[in-house]
Image 1 (cartoon, rainbow, N blue to C red):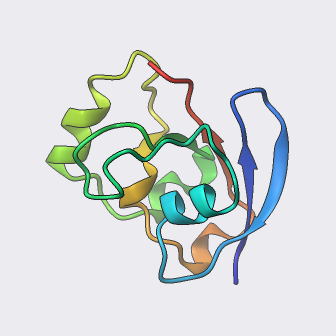
Image 2 (cartoon, helix red, strand yellow; image 1 turned 45 degrees about the vertical axis):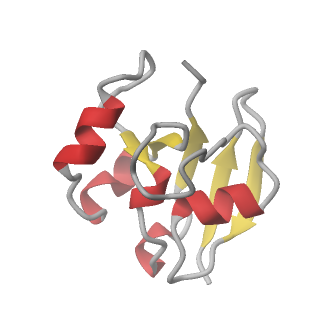
Image 3 (spheres, rainbow, N blue to C red; image 1 turned 90 degrees about the vertical axis):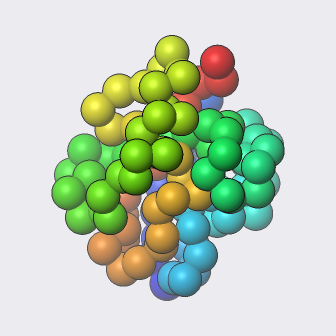
Length: 105
């Protein structure tokens, strides 16, 4: 089970066990981070699970879909490391990744 580092909106870091086969959204939400709203429940129809991925891990993730890209365009806090956590599957390649919960729009 990969260990990831979740950084909340205040900058506090927490180590979290991330079960493979789940999404980052599910792992972060179920670990008690209320800042990650995930209002649509993971069906890629909002941007309330916006996170910034550790730059070293970006090329290890599946490609971003057009829908995800369009939703992220609505965020004032989008950057080159932005992803919707509901679209990022947890796999062993995320071991040690730092995932920062984006500020709310």
